[in-house]
Length: 226
Image 1 (cartoon, rainbow, N blue to C red):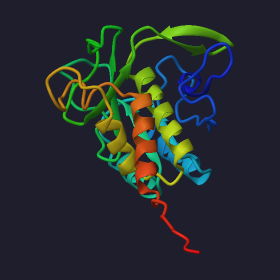
Image 2: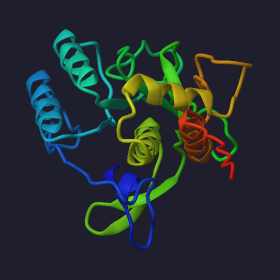
Image 3: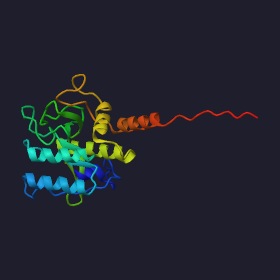
Image 4: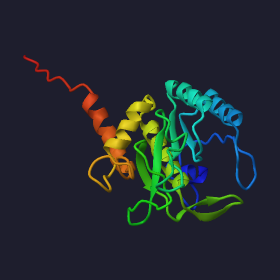
């Protein structure tokens, strides 16, 4: 997931100029389980070290303590992004993606269709490619990844690009840009499958630049009489 965001060698990530703060909030087992305490400690560690975007490519049940930690991070200006989950259309909303302070990301395939395993819900914000997506792998190689986790990492990369251009951008404003510039998919308007649609890094950046240009004061015409 980190490589999908910042790789900058043979394979370029979404935001190759970003800097990663790697947080070990899960154990090293095949199931990669994490506790409330370890996740909270990871959040606190990242926020204390100046993280601007926190990518959470994991999903589980609601946790009131983690919700409090997410609220604190969001108030401090941290953009929170999470995978919607891969338990299919009958799954209840999974967390932290379903938390109101988090940008929930689902995944699409090469035909811009929703992945069959992707969880649905009114909390879905945007979609991103997540079917056989090539990314760096542990050990220095590369691998294809499928699921909402890799999609969330890509949206975290887009968020990093926007913050690189405008460091003062607040989480709610960044979310608004992502949603307003997404390419609508599925039913017209925002829906429970794709959210606002497929995240578009180029359109998001152009929107940010256009807003910045509109906010600049217009030059004043001055005439000099002799």
